[in-house]
Image (tube, rainbow, N blue to C red; front, side):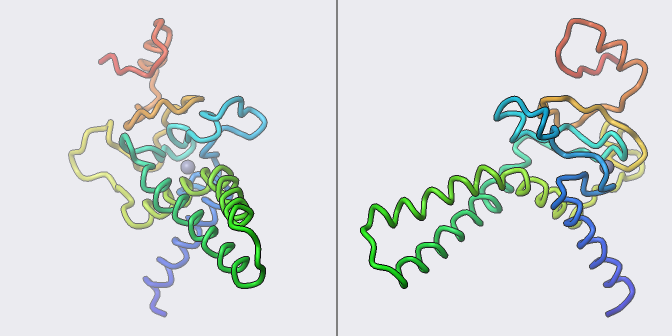
Length: 185
Ligand SMILES: [Zn+2]
């Protein structure tokens, strides 16, 4: 294996290792979701934070960004699980159809619920590996996704596609009675 290929393989493995721990795919330290003990509702469970406060990597780049992770990864693997369970039960036992459906559908529902966070984390890792979004020359600061610029984290993940850099001016705007991050300049 050549050196660049080995480097890419190592990066790929690292990103997915971070995702498996539900940590920022880039730095592997900050969480992608609200900690389990602070999760109060389904929205907390399913919605990623806006970005990593340590390296500034944005978790949701645009509206609908995680649709692919839900449909392809979560539902896809859930369906695969259902097919495997069905084939095993069908080949080993003779059970009534309604029992068969129950034994297939119930595990899929549980799997989709508990794997939803990992599906999004793995999608983030895959996207980072395939499309790292390194800042081009002359790009607006708002689109700066390179490491080193901390960005805000909203506790409920507002879905803001471009989390703004956390500046003093920003703090001023947060004192106003607005509940969302709004750029005032
Ligand atoms: Zn990070």
